[in-house]
Amino acid sequence: MQKNDVAIISISEGQLQMIISASRRTDIPTYYSEWFFNRIKEGYALVRNPMNAHQISKISLRPDVVDGIVFWTKNPLPMLDKLELLADYMYYFQFTLNAYGQDVETGVPLKNNTVVPAFQKLSDIIGPDRVIWRYDPIFLNETYSAEYHIRYFEELAKRIAPYTKKCTISFLDFYRNTEKNIAGLSIQKFTPEVQEFLAKNLSEIAYSYGLKMDTCAEGIDLQKFGIDHARCIDDRLFGKLLNCPLKVGKDKNQRLECGCIESLDIGAYNTCRNGCRYCYANYSTKTVCTNAGKHNPESPLLIGEIGPEDKITERKMHSCIENQIQFDL
Image (cartoon, rainbow, N blue to C red; front, side, top):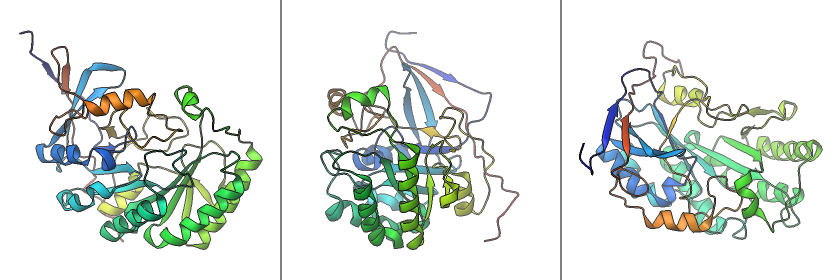
């Protein structure tokens, strides 16, 4: 093998379920939509292993093997005029819209002027079933008190309830890599009593506007308030949208409390420029800026280029749709 050659290893055994997550690791719709649509055109993406940067997976994005795509975003405006390019795919959005200002989400546009109208516009294009409202993560401090959350949540519900069917909430988890970022916010630790107080009030507001509510990766049982445990990457929703069930298991790589099904994430850590101080996917602002400077929308990789020490593994994939069974809707 020559010095600049890259090893390509094809895996023949096993099956990977073909739900694409775009992405838990970064906001692809906001910052990398040009790259994403280039990857759709080319029919594949290359994704570095977060634990071993020289291990790269080649992931097919062909519509005959991709059963669905889940987008995660705080602002989908940069990709709305290109959604027709996804006519051969089923997809939905996890759309985070919460109480915080730019003291916490430094790169997110103003909610009233930009983000709320973007939520409404997206729903007008693809329908309310395919836009999931995420009010998360919830944290408390002197500025963002429980009473503030309840008041702001209702203001948002008034404006976006006609544009969605469900709201997912979660309470802030403290990760080692987020401790530095949230320093100075004086965040208060939750007690079960405070969590239940918030859950009760938020769920009552949600249901008064015709919205279901569930929690993302929470161990606390809030069923008495009508709050279920979520599957943010949801085989049931895809089954309904596709009019055909999916044969797919729970994602074993996520936390025990997570209800998501298996998926392949095509994003990268330390690349999101939303600047959310609570975010687990960014370790430092400096690293994010460095990585953003390496982004090339023409590259098969989200960040950077293929190097001489990289090894590409072509992942074997095919659809997990059970075509023999149909839903009666």
